[in-house]
Length: 206
Image 1 (cartoon, rainbow, N blue to C red):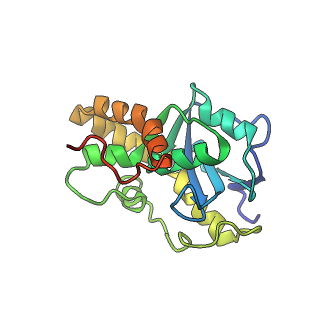
Image 2: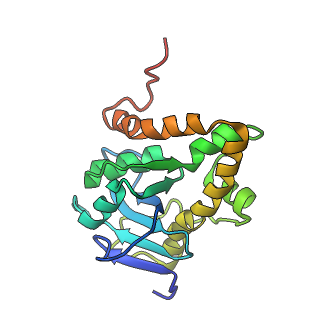
């Protein structure tokens, strides 16, 4: 590993690792269907410039220390598009992730002047960082991941704390924090509905 700010762990987090009161989380998978496409990598960062990447092996269904962190009520998990990641983490590791903060949901609540709510757009506007999406469609199930893949995966969590801070200020200015919190609280249920086959159905529609 040539980049000292990226730490790769096989199978689980090491003992004694702390991320403080908020940890940025993302996943890499073999595709977008949780029933078919397995979890390959879980990325985490405390917002300190270092990313910890946990590689999940084919057939692996347990990562006790990672699961404990995801379920720790004292640690907020910051995602971008939490709906997908939370579902994958429950499907493959049995983790019921909470509490949750989703930058995509907040962006849609407060950045109503645009329809661009991707992480790349948020990073550029709110953190002045240009993210490369070149490795987005690469093979995350490979036994050995390339330096380019690891750098791409790390970039998805390194800036979420800074983005959250800007979005929080916009939430308070707009008076919509209660909407955001209600959406966060519902996310594990929404993810479970996806896993149950209700991904495309609007159960609130007529």
